[in-house]
Length: 52
Image (cartoon, rainbow, N blue to C red; front, side, top):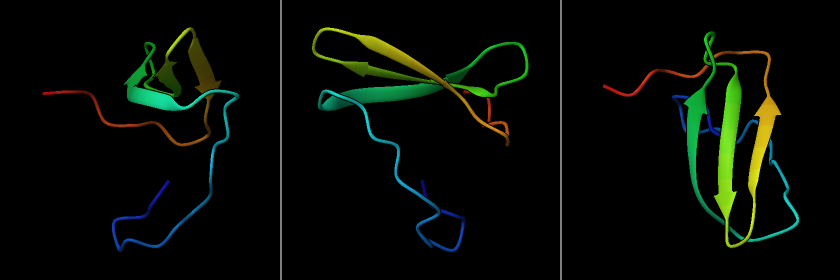
């Protein structure tokens, strides 16, 4: 994850190579990560932005 200033804020590791990600949930605090055989959901403290 990167800040708007391109500073690395942290790394989220999943057991497979990720293929895509999207914010979701009513509060946009769920980060969904797709991989070859699974979909992972991670709850975060700061909400993401909805897709336009």
